[in-house]
Amino acid sequence: MPKIKAGNINLNYDVYGEGEPLLLIMGFGMSGAAWLPSLPFLGGFKSIYFDNRGTGLSDKPDCPYTIEDMADDASNLLKALGIPRAKVFGVSMGGMIAQELTLRHPEQVVKVVLGCTMPGGPNAKMTSPEVLEKLMTGSKMMASDPEKAFDIIMPVLMPQEFIDAHPEIKALMIAGAKMMPPTPPETSERAMAGISTFNAYDRLPQIKCPVMIVHGEADVLVLPENARLIKSKIPQAELYMIPGAGHAFQSGDPVGINARIVNWLKN
Image (cartoon, rainbow, N blue to C red; front, top):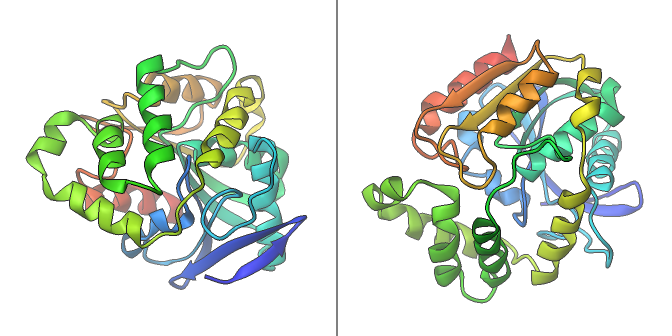
């Protein structure tokens, strides 16, 4: 993956496929390489995926990573690549970044998919402290002991019955993690500080481009009520709730779920 100067930060990015530009924004603690399993299903697009600040091979400044700063990073990446407008797909924290990108730089966003995310602010429906603690503990452990880290994190990402029915998933996730540059433990604290201050709720009606909201009905990390909250503020948005799916909503049916998202993005 090459690096490029995006504003005042160096971002590591890569491009996959041909077609309209599609900016992919990853979530909490994960490098852009976490998009790799999805890329074959996003045909017809030039998918641009990158490491958010603090992850992968991008710069790791010693400060809180606000959602606003990360949205500006994404905006500056598009500018640096000479892409005036793009379709955008963000998941989890990446969905927060996608909201902020669309609000701060509406001229750059053609359409946006908001996956398993929340609007922030006092109206957002927060998960339990126990689930949040598992996320933080597992994320910080990922670099040193990915096997134990996934034992902690997988039930946060997927329903236990899905994990039990697919024992191969853990091995695949560990193999994928070992292929990515490790995320420093301090990134978890810096990114969580940014998430805690994020609040797009009252500004969401300002979003005028087409929006698709995608969420798993069994998500225990970002509760499904958040998808309906976003929909209530952007009435024209399409809401796609996936029965039985957890936070990693694509896991159960990557072909069908991505096909629906791609079809919406193309039409």
